[in-house]
Length: 348
Image 1 (cartoon, rainbow, N blue to C red):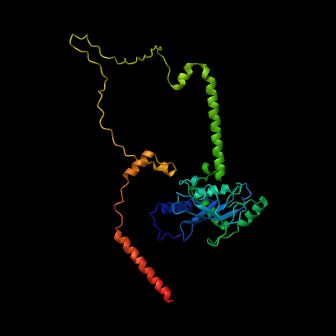
Image 2: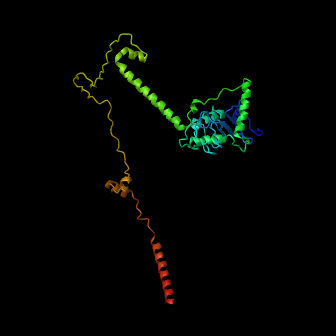
Image 3: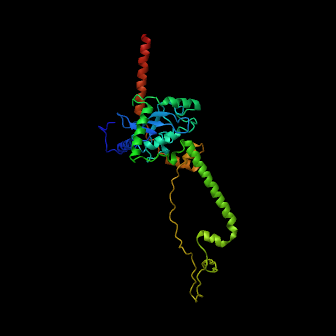
């Protein structure tokens, strides 16, 4: 792999280079992955089938395509070697692939994906995209044939690629620098999104049952005493309760007219008036009666009062007609045209 012309300041590029260096410095005897010579975002991988399975004797080759925003988005995977479990050269639909971005975690990398991919070989296809359902005999036969499968880009057989990795891993082990055995994360132990959703639904059901049982036991223990209930709430009443009388509501006194002393001779008693002084009514406001156009549009007749108001407000155009000489001129022109037409007809 050449790094000429690569922007090493990009976080994505730095992440890919770091993962490639880590896979090269700590090889595994069970899988191998490296970027291609021409494209840093395209990788080739080779992995050994999981032990104690129909794929145990197989070695499978495939291609990984990393998105431009890796590791924020997951990579996509294709198997190039026939396995009987995945279709050849078709993107597979798994929880670590680009088909389910919601289950991908940026903390995972190519190594984690390869470890999970090995375990996914043992899961049923279940009609998923890129999955195949074949017999175990066919899968064993394909596993035996896969060891000699050669990638045109890599120029080596699958067995040769893993043999080199196994020798490098053994050399590190002798030096005491062997890497710990890779394990599948708990989030990836279920290969398909449907399995993850079922597991999540099962957990929710278990939580609901536990909550229901807790509510039932709480209801059964309510009769054991008020002290236990107060302890559960974090508060216990220790002082004696003092009865408190509820305040009574007294309505405000009604207004009474003022009382005046008896009038002396020659003096009149003032008449009590209301609190608000009475004002003399002013001139009545003038209202403009506007027709109800909504009612008119629905076919209702105008009120008689509105009709009279409209007729009174209509301007008088009787004195603004066309002058009489204009009418006479028009008649003269029409008569001349008629005479000319008659002459033309007679000449014909």
